[in-house]
Length: 94
Image 1 (cartoon, rainbow, N blue to C red):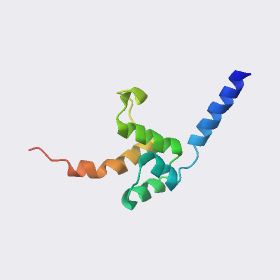
Image 2 (cartoon, helix red, strand yellow; image 1 turned 90 degrees about the horizontal axis):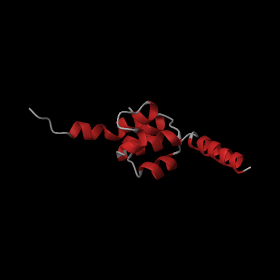
Image 3 (cartoon, one colour; image 1 turned 135 degrees about the vertical axis):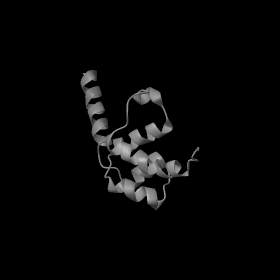
Image 4 (cartoon, rainbow, N blue to C red; image 1 turned 180 degrees about the horizontal axis):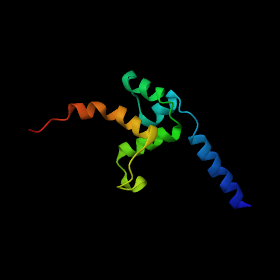
């Protein structure tokens, strides 16, 4: 009996994380973002899980994804939106 209730809870959690992320969800996961970042992320129509995945990736925790696992899909696009200015401001050598 305990197993089946655990399975239902896990399925419910997965379903919850796959629901579309709201602006409040994105703020609670990624922090306050200006409109130049928030609006493009919202335009992607990410799920809560997509935003969480991007946040974990940005946190640099290789134990979660593995060092060789590339980020894909909407989560990858979110990371690109959040890091584009960092890439443009990087000093160029040469």
